[in-house]
Image (tube, rainbow, N blue to C red; front, top):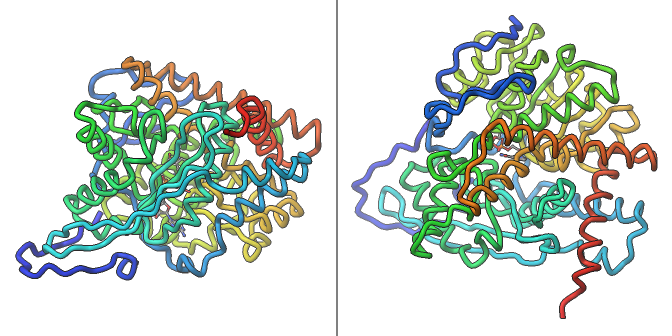
Length: 490
Ligand code: NAD
């Protein structure tokens, strides 16, 4: 990762606004000095040795998130929140939900916008803008990621918070949904600046977060180190350690075994089950293309590869690589960590991101950002299954086009829920001050995901609905039931 080079002797303090500025297939595991070991689901998990439990991030710099080439600037993008609301309306119609409940679910409960200064390494002061949104609290405190990306908006945070509400309800977790972020490209900051930004943002949103109120986790552009800084800042204000205020922390500071790879492994569990049940296809016979090679994409690639799938293409913001014989995700990850991107990987051919999305594969995993598969490019998709690793990667218009083409979409709130499930386990462990074994965590995560998958499939059989509608129906019904018992205050 390239860190910003900075001169430290600048005398002048300039106030600037960040909003303007920021803009050959093998089933054997290769050597992997940097990544934690990840046993296959059918084999025992790695021994809980001190060494295997220590999973510090290889860098304190967050993962790659530059504004993608070809990605429209935030203000030109379709509103993610209107996509989320449209999805809600579609399901509310299918459920015949009453108007009062629609109105209640349609808007977030609380939103906080903060503008805050950070002293940069050259002694200038930059003003950053951040958000935190709580969508719904009927089932418990809110939970959701914090994103550092130049295209973060309040609209996006609202959408992501709403999707988190449905995901937590579908997984039967005692949480509502939240999301937040800062408009920044963290790759442009030094580590000291990143830490200062994180601590000040945490202070600004500290009214909104807490182990019983709202528990942040990593998302695009943030990682375990950022969660540790947030936890430490919150704890300093309280005067004692409050580990349960964030999840996705390093193991050394009350993180949970298994959290780093949970989202990717969960995607693999769900996709493998769906391939078997809906396509009669074993994952070891499946070809897979993955858009995005950060936390979610890289762990999905690795866990699918370890179960025999052929990962033929992978992309990140720098471009895409392709090998019809299958890529080795561990080797590719080493390369991306060294160079900052998968683009240029010497053991593969080059593709554009558009070409990757159009590949004829069994499974396409969008694992980058929302709004990637739209009415404009959905007709070019040739995958049989779209396993949504990212939140909100497919617009409602694209849903309809893909459905007409006979593609199966495994919706985000089911497909990528492994991360929040293990985040929940981390929160419980922190509240109890008692750590669970990695094997228990993997077992419990798998059970929760597959039990909820069974419920979703049962609804699709009963009602002939698509998976997204069925998953949303279960989630919304759980919230409606809670609201009916709790009532509307006062
Ligand atoms: P990350 O920052 O670790 O990785 C994002 C990846 O996407 C990077 O490789 C980046 O280069 C790539 N990318 C960005 N724009 C792209 C584009 N236009 N084309 C191709 N690649 C592009 O983020 P992450 O944590 O892996 O999150 C990815 C997605 O998964 C987000 O939608 C996030 O909300 C969702 N998600 C994350 C988690 C989690 O546990 N981290 C859990 C559930 C859902």
